[in-house]
Length: 478
Image (tube, rainbow, N blue to C red; front, side, top):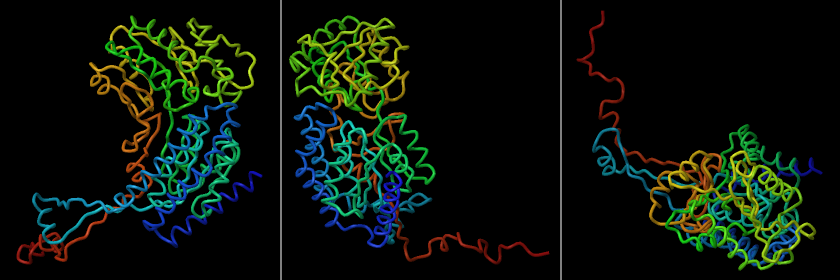
């Protein structure tokens, strides 16, 4: 079966590349039509998507699924459609020249410089399981606006949702425009090795290294949206009740299975107890019970459940204090799904796995500090994260000027990803390249520089064309 799928992928890529050359860059009308079809497709299949997500996760908050998979998928597509005409216009650039003032002269004589944004061709899109629809559709705003064709490989972990994704695209798009291929990791590996014109991968850093190696064989340009350990820095002037509420809302959304989820918190030493107390209050208010509560999402499968439980056991064995927030004192040892109560890990040490690997679950290590500079130094001692969250006011400039991360949300977590006018992406180990809005349009376009020269041969007038010396200045021959 895999051999048939891999053969089909190669056939469709060849078809899309041939159509791209034959038909050229799509018109404004066609790009708008593709965006409209994508919007109609998501709206039509929203119930099927939410149902499939329930199958894949065991239990997934349907209200959150509507917000994160449907509304936040349509939003970027609508934004792209609204701005499409403006984005497609050539970008004028000032004419320059090697000699001072010469650029102005060239402009007066009719020289022009501009950038035209051309579609790259076929963009491959490898999407993850945690937000399987959104992380296909949100990038499509820029990809389709830029005029590209697309091949999609959704995650095999969220197989029910992947099957719905395939069905809905096949209804609304011809395979020469967009095609979806489902399959196991072998199919995914073959997909990443195809000679796309651009490849977008969203997922873990370890797999990204394999994707990057495969893409290098064909020198395929990459956009990598990864993750890492996104820190929360709590300043001494922050209101702890507000901090705990925002942090725990972000940490329990999708049970922490978010690339931008807060991964650990740095809290002033004298505020740690208050942070723990307010975190308990916040979770109790949101989830008075969890085991049979549709609002509280399950861990996606047994493997990830065991991985997170392993982190907790390792931390406990090495001296950490675990604060399990379980308002109704429910027994999670027997349950139909893979739910883990929100858990704070106090006094974590660097030898614990939970401080070394991205958690991707409802578990939050809490480290204490005495001086704010300690928290900045700690963040800088680690790999650069996808997101950073600062709570406070007094030292905002200090923290942001002295740390590097893919993006930042101040006095909240995760929220910067909702801004279509801000590029979303990582830095170093947390990713490369970015998308959203106009930045996504540019990411998936080729910026072609075009210079129109004046009719006068200025090089000749300036004496820059051989023979460089006048006849009378030439040295006599022997």
